[in-house]
Length: 468
Image (cartoon, rainbow, N blue to C red; front, side, top):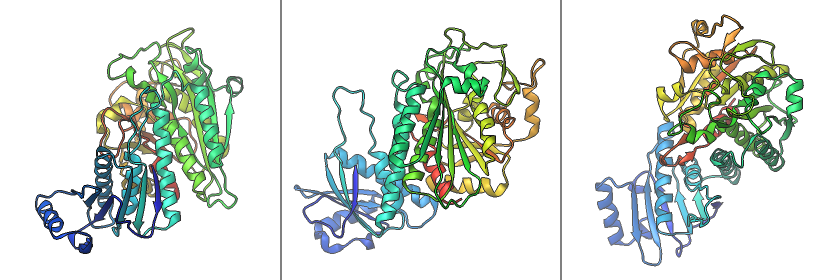
């Protein structure tokens, strides 16, 4: 979908008026019968009114007044309904006229709702809506920023929706290179030999059961006048497919969705694309350890002891707790940059998904309350809401091993937290862990949030860094 700012409404086009109240409508545009119909629909509390003029359609879309995050979310939902109706009516070109304060969120949701992943269909049934003309109080640069962030989110969705038959660890790194070339950020990809030289034991252990080689991608956006002297680092879990390894997953509602286990990596790639394209004045580095987790060959096994990148030893109790193994090496590697702040994103635990479902993102960390509150505010802004879990040191008791420095699995309740505490052992800087297992991949569309890969994290990280 292409969105362009235009100066006025073309009377021959399909038009949607986005308003807060009936008083905002231009009565001269409508006939008396149409105005009467609109009033009737308002009484019936219809928020999307459709008027058929035979040669064209006119829509009246009602959103909530205000600038708070809830009003923005109402606007997103209203936009998703408009897109669905426009596609149902086979509309190709649409003009949207609005003076509402939530038009930014409305535009964003137009682009997110109209997303499709059709690559593997032999007959591609594309959405009809292709072009939107916008009559609204928004600058060209503001519009460009919104479009770029939505595009980046849709790129992340594409990556998550790709099967491992195409998107193995090497291809994921190649996709990062392509995005870097397009958006203007640097990408360095470490091969298996370099990973071995760095002694990234966690990543190498998980990769032992695979025929495909692992990769470790370093994405960097460093503008000439960055506001931060030390980089902000984003780490994304890149398990391109997770069978569970020798601790094999069941197939239904589990392994059958595990192409999404690299959603954290997709979020990092997407947000670096948006940050670079929009030239945010912050030095940001993305780290993506990538492999699949399979039970083949010489796969790592429960009972193994693995020496990690930082030389700490881990007793493997469950090979399906592989995400933390590869993230730990990346978090340890991040120390070399002496970062100001590190955040990771990972589809890490079923415990996080069980706790809050797809309705938000589980977060925990050792940062100052001020930083966590900024992240929560960004979560509200983009409606990827943050639920902060405790990060008490008592949870470390569950990670004690009788033969190594630690185990890779807690032995009690609070599995999402013990996973986070495991990861913290590989940090020496302010750190936030985000578990996106719940919202990363959904089975049915929810308003503007696509079925399958959702692109969660891209908009959250972008808003957080923009307002940092």
